[in-house]
Image 1 (cartoon, one colour):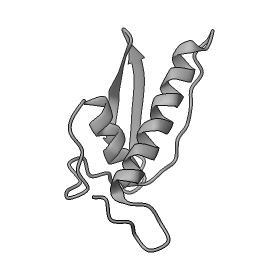
Image 2 (cartoon, rainbow, N blue to C red; image 1 turned 135 degrees about the horizontal axis):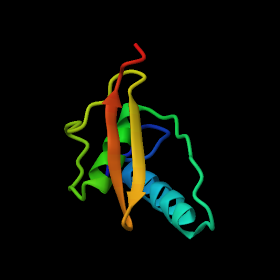
Image 3 (spheres, helix red, strand yellow; image 1 turned 60 degrees about the vertical axis):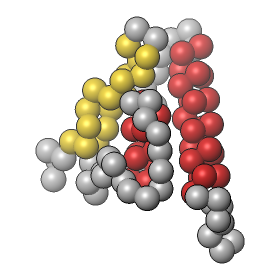
Image 4 (cartoon, rainbow, N blue to C red; image 1 turned 180 degrees about the vertical axis):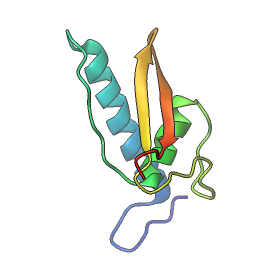
Length: 94
């Protein structure tokens, strides 16, 4: 997981970047005086990492434990100080 792709980052560096960004986004939302909706548009690899973070599971790049459908919708909400998935991979719009 430490080997970099040519001209890019390693899977572990990718994980850390996404984790840091997602953590900061959650902290910013929690510290705001009012909660606003935030829309994040991304690909399945990032969604897979976010699912692992929310569910407090160890992540590996070897297998996408949470595969995401193309244009699948996911909702994450803060409940009692924890971030929870309240909609997972919904595709009724297709």
